[in-house]
Image 1 (cartoon, one colour):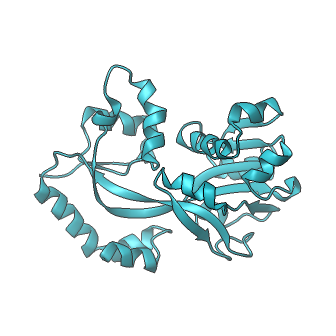
Image 2 (cartoon, rainbow, N blue to C red):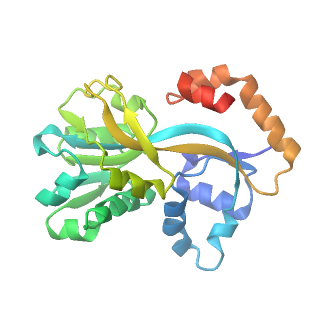
Length: 250
């Protein structure tokens, strides 16, 4: 019996469709499960979305880190600075889980997306891990970008204009993010050409998951295949560092 794997590369809508239909044996779900439910459950009022997309975690896959980029000319330092200054930014981000995560972070500082729009902020739909997203920053069409991505993410390796990563170091904010499965993390100096010192942020571990009814022997064989080819995984995935590989092996 062969397992069928679905990942978000073909589009999140396709992933949700396959999961709800029970077509996938294994899949790599979007991160931040509580936010995923909050975003997608209203789209499926005729079914129990949480139950329909239930899974069991098979193994950790990789880590993704919150990346908040801002053009140097903004002078921004972190999200608290945005709220304190009521800075009228134009942000590029996704429209689902990513934007809801940003709204939750604004909420920690007593603000919201609606409130930022009232003081002049704008939101553009842009995948900030794509060449289009980077072009929107370089051209000035957006001056802030918000996403989560592996480290180092190849899209950012070629940036040669004035941009910075905004840190997440507020202990209270990090504690709030833990409720969504995040942990304190660091994007190290040198990860990108524009990162000259360590930048504190938050990360979340992406798991490989299976439907609850996938037979144990199939899950075992998939796991065995992964462990027998860890060299391929390390070579193919930019966030699969030696440290993370050791955690997987343990």
